Every structure is written in C-alpha cells, then in structure tokens.
Image 1: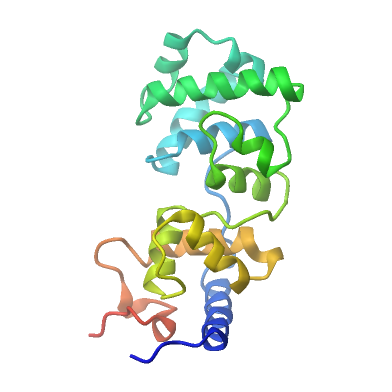
Image 2 (image 1 turned 120 degrees about the vertical axis):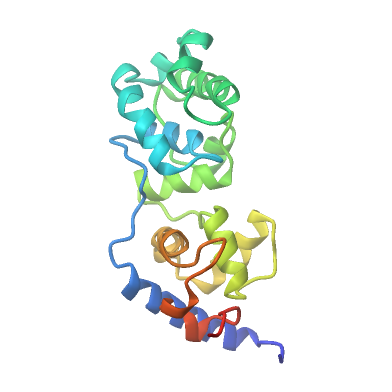
Length: 217
C-alpha cells in the first residue's frame, strides 16, 4: 500500500469528520455532572472504568459531597467506601482528596480553567484536563485521547503512534480547533457503538470506505 501524503490524509480526515458528524450528531460526554467539580471528580473516577459504572456511583456521591472542601476534609476510609464500586478506588480516593485540597488551598475551591493548573492536580493528566476544559468550560485546549480515540485513530491510519500524547499531536492539525472536543466525543461514540475493540462491525460501519483497516466480507 503506497504511503499516504499529508494532503491525502488531511482530505480523508475531513471526510471522516463529516461521516462522524452524520453518524453521531448528538455525541456528547456520557458522564453525568452538573458542575466543573463534578465533571473533574467523575473523570478521575472513570480511569479504567466505564462511564455507566461511574454514573451509578456519582449519583449518590454528588449528593454527599457538594464542594472541593467536602472531598478534601473527608476521612480517607469513608471516601474509599463511598467509591468502592470503582476500580482502583483506594488510589482514586487519595487523589481526589489531594486534588481537592489543592483546589481549596490554591484556587479558592474552584476548578481552574487552564491546562497547566489542572495537570498539576493529583490524579489529573492531559486526558482529564481536556475533558474538563472542553466540556465544563467550552475551551478547546486539546483532543481527549482515551482508549477508543487511540484505537480508532490507529485503525483509521490517522497515526501510527500508540502514546496518547503523540496521538493527540497527530490529530490536532487534522481537526479544526473548534471541533476538538466534539471530534473526540464522536470517535468515542463510534468506538462504543460500532468500532468495538473485538469484532468491529465493519459491515455496517459508516466510515468503512475511509478506513484502511476495514474487514471485508
């Protein structure tokens, strides 16, 4: 297969964006939240866990914990029990307490609106920061790269990179900045509904003609 030129990849990326827009016009963040703090907490909890399970846990959690200080002052064992149905709950409880202590001490209890300030918080990396900035504040500072975005980016041959930061760097020039957040949502929705990790539904895939990895048959 001949190597794809940058111009050809850009043209194909544009067609992929259009196809995703048509396939998933209502794509959005599937974590349930009502404030930037709630989204930050939910996203921290979502690492290696499904959004559905996070939403089950946060339905009660967000009633009990209303502010960053509530998390910061929580007894470690109590917070652990409150999120025990989440994978890695002990380390996540520790990170939440530390991150929220920093919010109280350094940001007046509010979630900051900058990538640098967010990734300085315990348990918060680029992915979590981009989720919060893009969805809670409408700031397109980067493209969220989760397991679905990584998998689809590779299958669509938009990049050969496997490192999330490198994948993001490859996607950013291919997508208009104003679409960074919604583009990641559409890829995630497509990964959850069509391009499964195992047995992708290539036969019914809206991106099939644009995907070098599509399975024939």
